Length: 398
Image 1 (tube, rainbow, N blue to C red):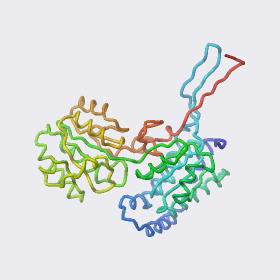
Image 2 (tube, rainbow, N blue to C red):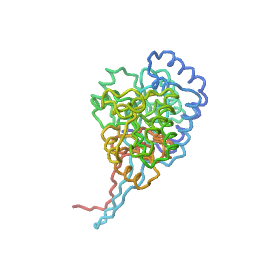
Image 3 (tube, rainbow, N blue to C red):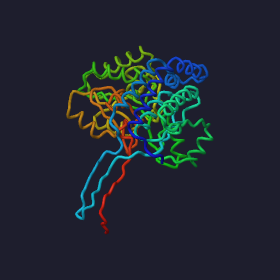
Image 4 (cartoon, rainbow, N blue to C red):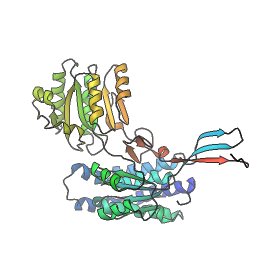
């Protein structure tokens, strides 16, 4: 493990990186255009994530500026105890050491996730997808310039320009110490990393989020929340894929038809379970397996629930462990739903699109974890630490 950099030094590198992104804005967009021109796939969500425009660069710069002013997460005392024999015992937050981030198509991850990992005292290994190679190499060049300008060794941020076979070989037998791996991307990427990695992996990126419209819902709110969750950005893991409608809702059929019309007007493909298909003339799902799917597309599945418990059970069976929202004016029912649905984030009367480190006040995120260890949901700067015990004695023996 490298000697940890002082927080002053880490902040100086982050500030310099923000300045370099502003300075190289035009060049970065031009390089990214080459990646976009080279991308021949037909994955709309991936193409959207691949784009680096002024808004994305503004977001990168802002994330670095916010990180610079955030408190150092390393060395915080979490627990202290004085033993009866006089030993002074402390548990403090500590850096992991080296964090590897493997991701697809999002050059902004090279800045935002890399920045969080660096600020929390870690060496960074970045492995982006081939579709964003030129953009990533340009950004890493800026990282290394920021390090050099602050007299910090360039290998604090490294880019691993590996193909799939080389990546697999590295995961199975790393040529340098790796303490934690964070895969950011689709389910195939996550499965690949989990299968081959020899160190801890934080699973993140899978959505398949649900909204449940309860019998006591405000229907205007329900409509707005579902439209926002599905259509505001299809390419993100907090987008909405499934809707359950309580059959105890007054005029639930009329509401469902109105919802489907609104979605179809926004070019969303709507599929229904057998009940929804009958009343609304939309294609019926071919198999219940579709309830497990994350779409990352203008596509949604709507089904019914005959009770709150049925909705909870269905969400817990099929969801990706990310986010679920109940639309209801009944706070007791909402609390029961939120306590019993097994997702990292649970909502009452709000869009799942808010599951995001920046929106949650974390100042950005490394990932959104659907694991329960060591941190669940958005992983911000303050969560990207392990811990260490410090014991101060004066010759005590046991």
